[in-house]
Image 1 (cartoon, rainbow over the protein chains, first blue to last red):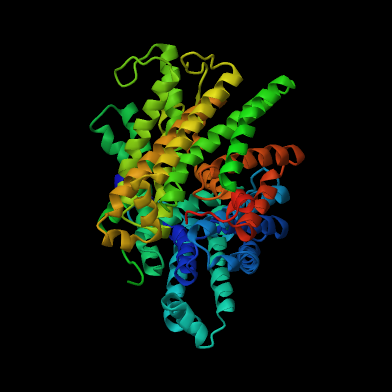
Image 2: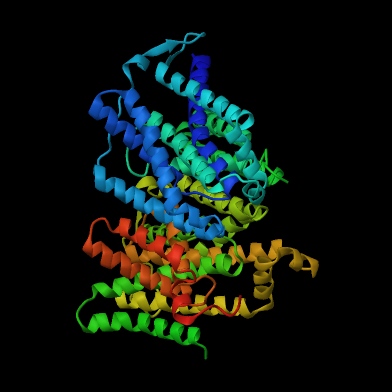
Length: 306
Length: 322
């Protein structure tokens, strides 16, 4: 029974990790290429979830909702890039923080205006409901397994996109020398918009997939955004590989910590206290891991450049 | 006197006069509004030491603000129930709460600052944010002081010679602390320490080349900054008679940065101007529409994109000390 529980929690951690990766990949790509810190990335996640939930409710098809989430988040990302973000690339980080903070207020309140304050609910598609028997006697929800598969597939796809295609070549060139690729005749404005929309679409995908597990509501993006920051700080800002490893690390450490810490503490102190102290400690665990990693490597595990 | 000094003096006088005018015209609600302005200004004066003078964009000052709030709440609730705090019987008095707030936040700032200041730029922003979230999650999962429900302050802590239950007295205490903090900010800015701090913002390599190590200077600035913000948090808890975990949450950190930028970064009275404008906007937009945050976002966006330098920048021209 204990091993079944541990396998189940490991898979939960993995599912959480790949979801964080979808968020962190966009953030780290946008920072790597454009040097921009985007607090409004959580809003794009929320837009993906709302688009999926409302289209799925309207058409009855989760899959149409998923497509809508990609389109809506990418479109929102492109519009924001063209109207606001484009003016911020030359500014310092303080202005970027402030402007994207303002965007969060606008997106959150705008969404509440359109959809009301009540959360929306999104059902798991019938093809993916049910559970799978795992070796060792545990059973695991098929939908969560599907999220893991999609996340890994996106990670593989991003790797191929960046290392094998012309667009990826331009992205890598943009990371190492922005002026030079402009001078070589690449339309850098369009490239920036495409990268931003790509990052937004990944966030929207994450939001839509998680929307079927939790309720879809205003403010759902920001806790995930902050964890994604932890991920890219651990992995090294600008590194997709770092984001992948950081995301899995954070996902697994956070999930396992919540299960294991109270149990470990219960062997030392009395159970009631162990439960509350364990819960408090577990919620801090990933930040402690981050601090430890930064104490050794201040620029993260896979710092780009330098 | 230059224009910035005159405008700053007028702003402070206006803030000081507001509750008296409110009281005499029979609008006591505005006394609370003015107190809120003074307390938020105090919190951002603290942040302005790190952010404005030191160039350290801390996106985690809500942690110190909240720690201050919990210090006040804990002192008040223990004093009411006659329970000792950490083995000591403490009187329910504001200076005691402020001392506790400053010590606790100073220690947290010392540890998190020592780790965060190993990095710079966007890493620093994200790490301070992450540490503040850590404190937030700790507070909401720790049941002893209310957890997610927050902590009520049934009876405000006392202050010698004042009746803290009276709104005007609380305003005068907050305004007095604000003036003291402005004095500290001004002293730091003109001191050798402040010169080194500002120089390490402008050119770290040169500062190191003349034999000053930036790290300890920044760490001390970060700790002082956290302590002032914590005292503001303690007053905020007294004002609301409630310590909400949302004082620790990241939007509060954003709000403090917003106040500074609105007013004018690194300027003495920037936070005062910013806090007055922000609270007025909040109140005025909140009265006009339920969706005030939407319009607040639009206004902020406009300020960042088109009005760099904040209100004082618009009113008093470019800062001279840069």
